[in-house]
Image 1 (tube, helix red, strand yellow):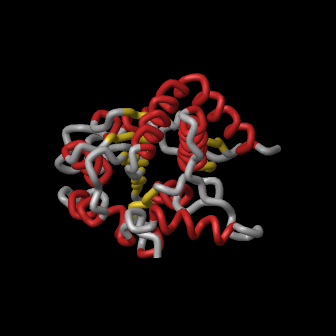
Image 2: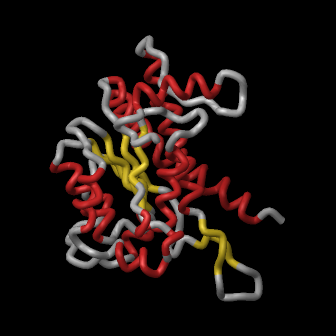
Length: 242
């Protein structure tokens, strides 16, 4: 029995039925900004940072994408430490300043709970700097959680567009027969599906405007390295390619 596959289909169906308008709006904002020479920054803490990595320098992905990666907030330098750090007010502004964002850029923040200081303040600081802001968050989880330390807003209240990943409270989506425990975390799966849909719709906006979408190709087929080098030459400085 492929229980997670079945649950994943249910989640995707809920997203399609309830979040299509928000996704379309996000894609239009991303496309408009990128066609004006701006950059799409993507940020998350803990497991949510994986969405930023998924869209960064990706075959079939948009080239003007900057993954905002702060190692201490990722899993590989210690998940207990990163959990503590994402709750500290004031850290987000320091991280965002390192990226040298410009007015008119787009920032997408991914956070399942949408409650902790760093994701919320990241969005608020970005708006103060004149960036368009998008969030991918679980509305159910966010409503069930309290406010983070020093916060009076949750992430969905701090952005221009909030997209619900349609996952359940606690993230683990599957009951285990004979146990009170649950498994099957679904937030990243759902967030990546949403993010890839935004990429697709943004690329379609380019074509509708009579422009070639700036997409990377796989480096493992003939011509891929050369094509990607041309994208890197064009966008590399702002998206920190090296």
